[in-house]
Image (cartoon, rainbow, N blue to C red; front, side, top):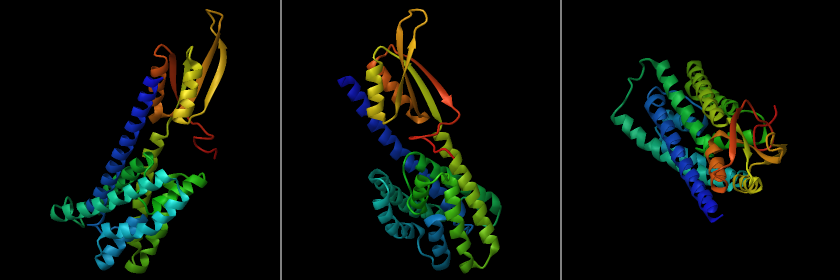
Length: 296
């Protein structure tokens, strides 16, 4: 069992490092899309970054600094309403975002990659896809860039609305408010298109990570495997009673449902306990219930 515990602890550490790596990658992707394609074209977007961009267009205030200041109040909400782990990752995400937005604003002001005013729609599409994919990576790995992500996470936690749809609702309200400053419906239309593309990309990334797999495990140590999966992964386990047709002996089958990204963790547990276990893995079209998606 000591070997099993070492494998589980090592796997937990690897998962945590992996989560923070993809959190950084997602934030960086978002920051590049924001600074390289959105700010130069003076597009309006949703979220705290959208508010920060509007303040930048109106007063010249640095977006990175404004993103951090606006998030101070919302971080207090996250601290009381969401889990401690989510709050910590939100603080890390906001710090990363503010820092990288400021860094890449300087980089792309010195070395621009586009000519503002040319192919504006193409710039909008690229910026929206990068921003949506970046947020998708952040959400997939249990992180947050703060701001309306916190509001969206709360909505998604207590309702059946998808993350992308919740993001659309919040962001469109912010975009429409920009009319007070710009008095331009064109700006609003561009902002709405940006939101639709970004939220679609976000849902695509998140739904891909939510794919569910089913394990059927046959092992003489089925009880140890079931207990380990239940305690270490916090996943439900069902024991099916069967019979080997050739041996005519009773057989216990462990059935487990997990997310696709958790598959290797399941295999590591099985291998540590019974390397000779028979395992089948199948992809599920959809799984609804506790620990998975809600029935809509």
